[in-house]
Image 1 (cartoon, helix red, strand yellow):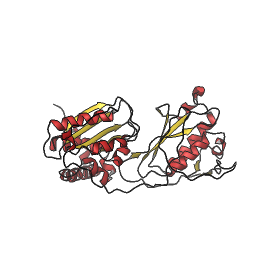
Image 2: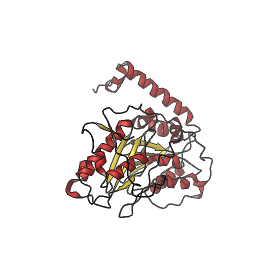
Image 3: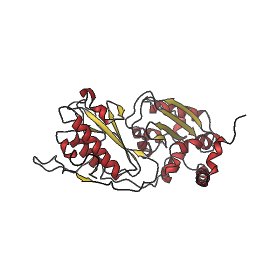
Length: 346
């Protein structure tokens, strides 16, 4: 017979037991709110890092399916959706049903949102092809019917890029959106817009205008420091920025550019250890920056994309400026100083 205590090993230590108790208390608290509030809204307002990813996945079915009787549909997405928040106005008109979207992000893990709220959907970032999306539809404990199943199926089709027409019955009801309370990020720290030679572009953003003249695009030589700055880890579920493009200005993204990027990213990570920088090229995530130099595949005019994930994301605009310089003929500014030391850029 299988050992029934194998899943209870976490309770054998004081810290593990206390962690389990906190999780249970939070689950009970959320469960009590679900009679009147959308689960995505509740989690968004709590902003609790312990209620994200795999931890929330453990009781997602219990809260929505077992307790409230929500209907579900799921599928690996068949297409890419660059801006899922644009779907929120359509979902907001579906007042006859409560909806929750659960997206399995390849980097951030399980993300949950009320699809009627653009601010919550924006946290999904770009929806990737072949990643799992699960839609839950119900009526907040008031039972569920065939219309809930239909709503879940239509919602999933919308997330896959299809055009759907909601039946009239789905547009009538009391399941409307409410104003949420959550701290905002730093509005001034928004990356600039850049286009690649194929016309692709990230989300638009505002930046201070550079000064005119030949010095306009220059950045002061980085300072080398022997020890990295230490910043306490921020709280709340991890978020991810959209992907922002950096256009290669060199004739070729060569080894010097690669080394400059590695030192820039290391400097950013040293200042913001709780944040993660993801790099993409040609739609694929780059796990090793050195691979961008191999075979000389990244040439002048190509766009390398990056995104930042974590809590309380900062200095993204500055990171983009440094990466742009590192992808140009001015990369040498980042190669000065001892190899093993971290640049003080942020």
